[in-house]
Length: 176
Image: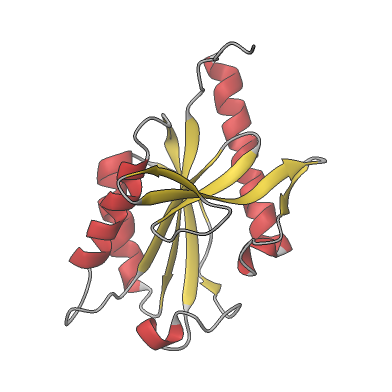
């Protein structure tokens, strides 16, 4: 029998997709008020790995990722996705989303996204929110799984997530 261990806080990350880069600024501002300062951020990236979002957001989609300095507990983390859904509604125009906001977290072992969509590999958390394991950390780097989204498989994304993990590792070492 194993003994339950206290879970250490994790590193909150957020990914944005939109054809209106000004929406990234608005969403970032709202998120900073709730979760604190940003410690890492990508430049605007082209998002051309799938056409899934074009019908909703249009063409020439852009992507951006952020990570937050403050670590978060895993308890009741489903609330983060519910909160970002409200931000998407707030930033909507003519009853249509203008931005997709995907929150998740990085731990030493993995990158998990929060989602409302159930699939065989997603674990139910609470309140209609699932945890979606996208990457796992093996051999000194994040590695994709068979269901990992195409953009999360790229070396550019993986390099950025590895850099966030390095910041996170320093944070938890310094907190110990």
